[in-house]
Amino acid sequence: SNSRDTTLSRFNQTIPYIRSKHVDTIGLGNRRVFISEFGTKENSVSVDTTRTRAQAVIDAAQANNVWGAYAWHLCDNECNDADGQDLPRTAYPIGDPMRPTNLRCRGYYVVKPDGSMGAIYNVLRNYWQ
Image 1 (spheres, rainbow, N blue to C red):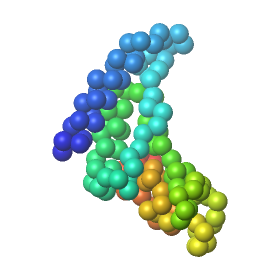
Image 2: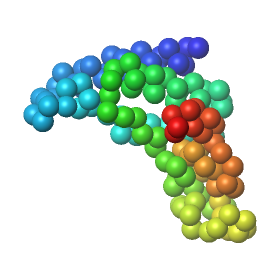
Image 3: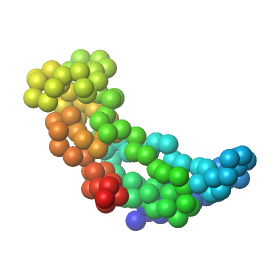
């Protein structure tokens, strides 16, 4: 898909560039670069786009032999209450009526506020074995 191709192309260009700007002072070779945070606002794009972009980042990390690629959040910390005020997802337990709903968060999650799995989960779980 175009989203996958665009994401993969950008990472495949960027990783070697970043690597070329950093001196390998401790002998890590190509593995001295890693992708510290990636994610997609699941509530702003389709489930397919979320999964496609995540897979493209992982594919680029593997193709470029980087140290690792780390998903932005296990649980989204960019949620709001009914009045639009910041409210961390963990402020209230699952089932508490004060807990933000899935749609009150931006969607940077593997686990949604209601406890269900986000779209990126199905991509990441393939690498947890």
